Amino acid sequence: MTTKTTAKRAATGALMGLALGDALGHPTEFNDVPAILAKCGPWREMKLPDPALVTDDTQMTLALGKGLRTAMDRGVLTPEGMAEPVRREFIAWNRSPENNRAPGNTCLRACDLLERTDRPWQDAGQIHSKGCGANMRVAPIGLVPGLSDEQRAGAAQLQSALTHGHPTALAASDLTAHAVRLLAAGAEPTGLVGLLRSYAYDNRSRYHERWLGDLWSRAQDPTPEHFIARGWDECLAVLDRLQHAVRTSSPETDPCLAVGEGWIAEEALAAGLLCFLLLVDEPLTALRRGACTSGDSDSIACLAGAFAGAHLGADAWPTSWTDRVEYRDDLLALGALWDGLRPEG
Image (cartoon, rainbow, N blue to C red; front, side):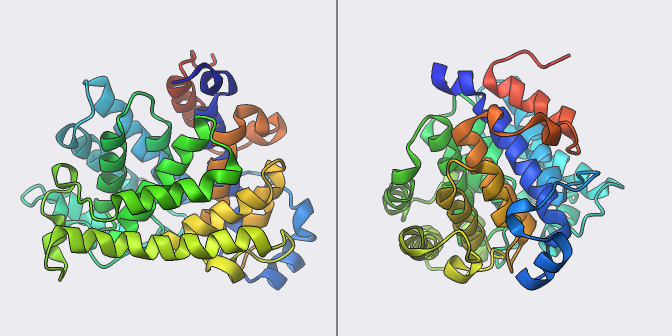
């Protein structure tokens, strides 16, 4: 990890931004823009709810983060070493009484199946689901220091496959983690979409068998390469729309009109990125734009927050907001660990 990344505390910034976006978008999910404006007033003045409760987006981000921490405490991150602790954390989330924030059906079905120890985890992942539930939670994999490119990509896709097995869910999770890593490491936002397109092209036919096993065989594709290419092609198509939208869209326009409503993986990635890229130097405004959309507002805003926090660091967020967000201590503990700092208190 670079000195620059440590100094700005990118991991803390990204995790806090994700949770703040989630809390801001929680009350507006399932509403269209006119209804949100009627409820909240002008979108640029949206206030963080009090209490600042989050959704399953943040809960599952923390579950993944804790599973990763356990896996990496045991040594080098491997598919076998990661799958079991993350599986356990997902099951614990599924059983928790706090899992009452309108979680997605795909995650619920998959987590129920993950409890069946008599079958491989690949049987749990919903092979036809590309909902945004996998890439809304993947930011920790872009923040953990010391991973190789192969480990990061494989881990991002594996955590998706535990619940969402569609190749587009895998590719979008990989791209989301890669974007977070690039921003945390100091990449310029103006070149980010180009870097993501290059990454998608380079990995288009690469199936991470060591991490995914025979997951691909549960679909109707003739080869694993054909399976994963379907996902990358859908992500490349939405990156094309995103590139055009960054040049032509106004922050005053609902980003969902340009790149989709965000209920599916590739559109959530694009909508979150669009909110961030249109308002790079205004992180709170980027969250508000994500929360005031006609689509999956909490997931769009949480992804925008993860990107903005990875880019700007922990100081992007006012303490008057971060002190009130739900799961604050858990978020700070993981952020401090990955930023190489001692946890506060």
